[in-house]
Figure 1 (cartoon, rainbow, N blue to C red):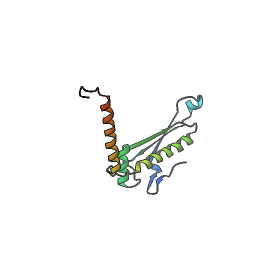
Figure 2 (cartoon, rainbow, N blue to C red):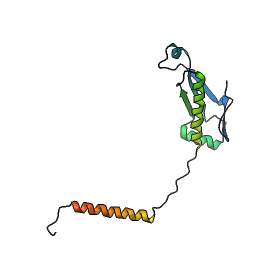
Figure 3 (cartoon, helix red, strand yellow):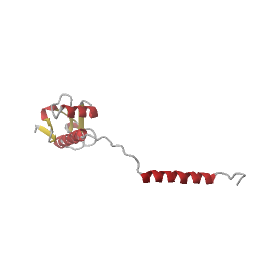
Figure 4 (spheres, helix red, strand yellow):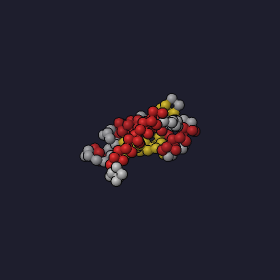
Length: 138
């Protein structure tokens, strides 16, 4: 079953031909099955050569992740489940990478916040004064 398209969002679809798949044996426990079966799935997507989305979207992704995104999955015993999981992780990563963070709008402290800060400083100063040794004048 070849993936024809990976839909990330309505305005961003990756063609299945742009995804490069590698399969290998996954290490760890599992005996002969793990040693002989090529169940680890690795998907690579080159953003720089891709035609998905707009040029600005691809540039934004390259700035965040670099030109190549690689996802490796070997959690399941089945190659198909690892492949499906890899596609899901790639989709999630690209979707999060396409989010454009709004610039923070600077705000000033409110009048009550300024007053509370000044009161706290005054209170702290009085506490420190009480810790000092009494002078001869007192």
